Image (cartoon, rainbow, N blue to C red; front, side, top):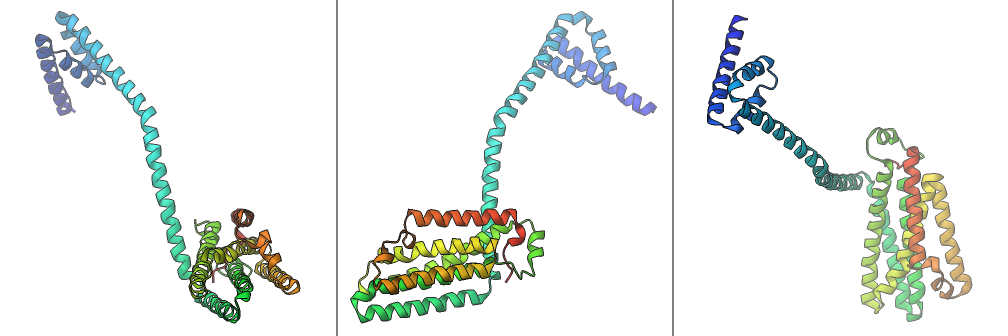
Length: 312
């Protein structure tokens, strides 16, 4: 205890010597620094006041400077607290967005690996059959080109929508509890699976359309407009029906729509009615309906997680 008091006394003596030297030199900055060091030592402050009587004016200036420094520090902290958060929040928002997109990319890659390989094989076979039928009809006569394009759109649409219904159904989801126990949103999983399947089928359909357009001199844009809208609309509709009622009901709804379109073509003996059907073209109405069904399905899955995707 005595050693501690001795050490403390030596420290105070050194501070007093510095204080005397600063008083004699009139160093206001040094006096302010010493007062700041002695702010929490009441005994040292008393000693400084007793030693300060011959230099009262310098002491007052030092105290004033010490208070000014404290005020400046306080103002600077307030300015930093009001200005810096904007920059910090912008950096934090950018970091969060980057992390979110990285997370989405990882989920997309993981779902690509988890989706059963039969999905890709079935889609490829269906596309091959559709392409063979369209190739055969277009080769018979130029008058059958329009009908072949619509037949191609029908088969591509039902294939894509069936794949969506199969992947988004959860009636026999043995791994659903695992999905629900993870922080990943079921809506994000449904979205990633839909993007993968629809994107895969659109890519294959575009390649097939390019081959047919080059072979028979057909406009690639016109052919793409025939099947792109129906694929997006039926896929979004199948997704919405699947998350609400189940994949079986979604498949039935898709097949009924496709059969209705085929019967309309057969009984009309032409493709004029289909070509003027706004729901069977790539236009604003079709795309808006597809977006509405897609967003509704994601909203429903986020509110009812147990209607989420099936682990296949």
